[in-house]
Length: 294
Image 1 (cartoon, rainbow, N blue to C red):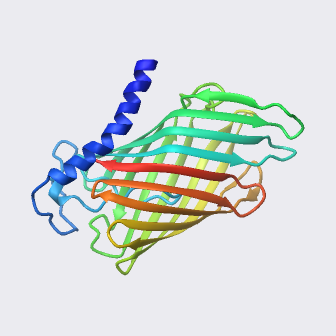
Image 2: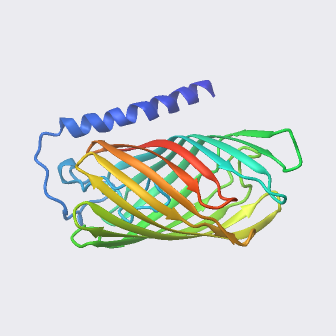
Image 3: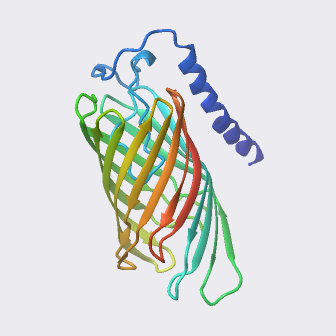
């Protein structure tokens, strides 16, 4: 396990440097976006000087409708994320720490990519409302397999883009961290380009989740809307509202998410941010992460 942890850490540290080196070593002039990649696939990658601008799903809840260019990999990861969930008479107070939560993507074709979510480490502690001691669990989380297909605006010729994402989350995690049953979901993200500096994004996510403590399934909805502002070529700011609801608690939550982004190179982006609770029973989050394409 020590050797595996060392290898994972080396990959997370080394991949951004690889992406940086690839972007700076390419001496060919870039073709203007959009490009025609209809004849490219995962076996015949798009040339690096014809890649579209980097459009990751992070850092917000609202995901991007754009896919990874055919034949290229993309790593999007939380280097660290702290989640504080307030308790109540019915629900325990929870604190969760995620480290090296990675989303690995492979562009399969012009409009489709395959994604695998690898939650390398999660530590969770919870405390019922009437207890003073914390219960602790930690370990590897539940792996998710996702498929994204863009059905509008993949060529970036117009202001509107839309896609559909389907996923299944498998109960691969450690006891106390895993949800113990497969979970399923579908996501519908939309992006509207407003001029050269603004993007309006919206999304509706519907999940069928499982509560291991109550031993029952429930439906979760997550509508969200975001405004992304670019300040030159390097700096961006995402401001987002997310409004989760589930059929277990039968109540809406509200979050205000704020996340600056920094484009180090064309293939390497850093981000950090917070999810601010707008009502009493909504979780608060703080995170830092990165995206690298190669």
